[in-house]
Image 1 (tube, one colour):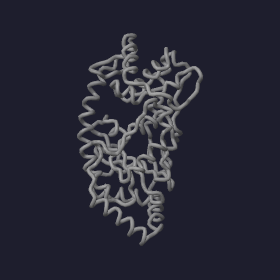
Image 2: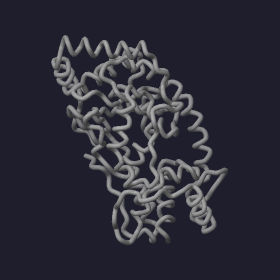
Image 3: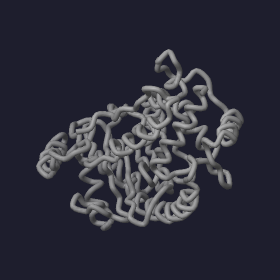
Length: 328
């Protein structure tokens, strides 16, 4: 079996774990790097883009071999036709949740020290259930990550839309579970799971376009996992409506807070939040002045385990295995 065939099968296998059938364009965009399936065992960045037509041709060949099935333009592993209907229903749900998310996030542009907000998880994928929350990755100004998180939590707490730590299920609640800074834009934990997760990120608020550009530039490691990855800019239809008045409030608040408190507010916010975080949970919890990541009970290990099990059932893949990014 050729490397590209393995790559396409592996891509469908990964999304099969999520019950997520793919169109040809999605297979092309989120294609697992064929370099992973060549005999030389090398792991390099992409050399050339594999086009839509080429991917569609191989998909049709795999379909003729009975290794892939297709229904109304969606491709999936044999026997999984039912996930097409599930995806259509989840797309409809996602559109409703996007309306709520953008309505809530409209007000985040009034907060100081927030540079960039990206939707992640099931919201970014457009693959949601009734119980899904709204995951966010937020970039704060360097040296103000704890203050920025505090303001975010206060804002969404007042609005009654913040997911609280005791809530196992929090439908339609904002879950700002990952903060980084303008000096720590590179995601340090890499795996096939995180590559797919961050490849799906959708910018919803971009205060300065150069910060978004720097973020994508710092995370080109995604190309090692995904052959044709292309990032989204900040000015597509998911972006919230910008409000100059709210942004001026944010800028004024920064000037006032920097003048009145200097670093004292950041120190106080750090001490307050550290005292409230439970560290001995499985998954990944990271707390530093450069990154705040709260993914207890992360799905990464479970998803990669199921993915590896599917891959292991195909002898053509040999000893190929994907490792997690370093979970507790």
